[in-house]
Length: 563
Image 1 (cartoon, rainbow, N blue to C red):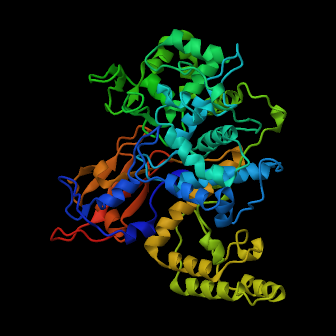
Image 2 (image 1 turned 90 degrees about the vertical axis):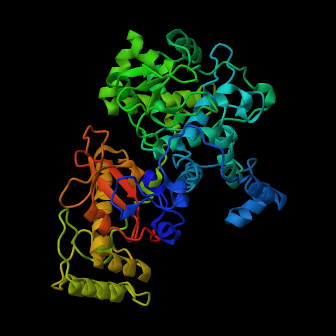
């Protein structure tokens, strides 16, 4: 899942020396927060625009250009420098490669306050497309004119330079794709990678020069209400239902005071595409925030969320409100309607030569690369939903047989013979998931990793949780044809409340979006068990959401151990 990729790896966690202690107040003295450097890289945040970059790749790409332009990049990346936009006719597979490259950057570029560029890529695609005027036929995604001033300097586009810069390495890697196609494809990719619906997409946009820049004022003004909303969206050709569905993109990201002037996230899961924006609009009580910024509203329950006047206008207007209520109750309906209208938005004013039925539906990174390799399959052992005991002798026997079976020197005939021997063994096997059934060959490293993981009770327990979640996603995908994403929120131990009244030791807890005020529970015994790892993944006891809790261990004398 993409959200899992937005966290620092365990290897990084283990190799990062602790430089300072961040012990939560009135908590167990044994457990504290990770080092400042680690927290900065992995804490949960909210962003619809990227913040100021902590480091920039612009000099790197300038250096590559100086060394030989696109040809130098392709040489370094193993690409074909002979490819050009003149004589190259890209296929669906070529666009899938672009999608994969964007998804890869989304998973690995985590140096922003929510750990994902996804929301800002959606905003870039939205704002590049939302300038369309159906009367004049100007604006829209065809042109990518936000590359130029004055359009790039319009107030509504503040902060989008970081999204454009984020995509520059992709443009260098695939020089044949236009900026217009790249920006819209990136928006579709971000929606899918953040758990949203499939966004069918087709190429055909052409870049334009500065003369095609649109005037300021074509994008929505969040300080205004119903009449302004309709003026803006009707100009593009949308109806009331489509307007409400499009505004549902506010389920992602947040506003920033140094850009829009507003401040805060719309919901509690700003990097997971959901219908929470609508549910909160309907169910939460909103009160005007007292501060020195523009008029905005905050939720009465926590005081941490934000709605703009244009958001609340959707609940004041009867025609708008009926769709808000529908989407608040029916996530599937919202996903379907959002997909349809987002596709329409991205295609406004584009003179396609292809037909609508020729649109591409891209495979997500999760469907291409399952999160969890099946170590039970590697060792030809059974896996059940309830934990089963595996003796050291069983594991060693399975390990040795796997090494023999998949040895590089094994000929196909020898492998077949060995399969029969293994099947007749008294060792428990999985008939449907065994290597003999799949015919898959495993490397020595894969077999060794599987053995070490399943031999360690704690590693096996954590691995089993990941495998069950991965299998649930696959089952849901096969059942519905869509990719199943379960939110994995990443928090520090400090973010959880602590109850030290329990006789068995301290208990940490946190509420879940499902309504369970103690949905996520972490005991002192849980932390002791995962002390070497510095992190623990727990599932909500009332729903399918998961949470990763980061922590560090302190010695009795107060010195923090490296984790």
